[in-house]
Image (cartoon, rainbow, N blue to C red; front, side, top):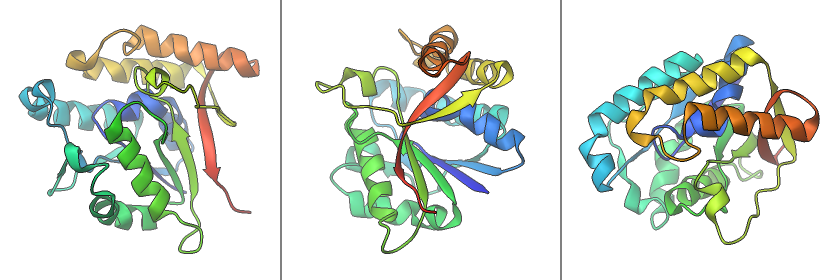
Length: 210
């Protein structure tokens, strides 16, 4: 299968679905991660070159191919110019069988914009794609309404969990609170406890066809 993760920022691919990407690549799927936006906050601007290098290295570590368009969109346009963001991701959406992206109820407006663009791009009357929404620490869990209610789980083994947690080490400027290798590992264990396994990632399955 062709597997695509569409993320707003470098490190979202690790935090949101890194273990599952590693698992799917291990099963011989073609796995790619698309990052169509460029950060504009002071820390992001200051570290952008290193962040893009970290993004590529983290993707390769997980077994995925990084995709960074030459014409990145300023992240401030993510919610206000959804049509433009949609147009920038549509060719990769067409390629994919399965898509992972951001939960639409995140506190982070850039995450919401990316999720909305995928929602529009995968309207069922145009194309049938399986779509999963992931959670991002310090974003999904920081909204006023704790609306992320997973209905799908990816069971991970110890190797997948270690790959995910180790991939976070590529982002030293982004580590804070639960966004650390140890923090990600704890979250995998919490989600695993919910379904009676050692490690798991949780998703909202929002489009499925059979």
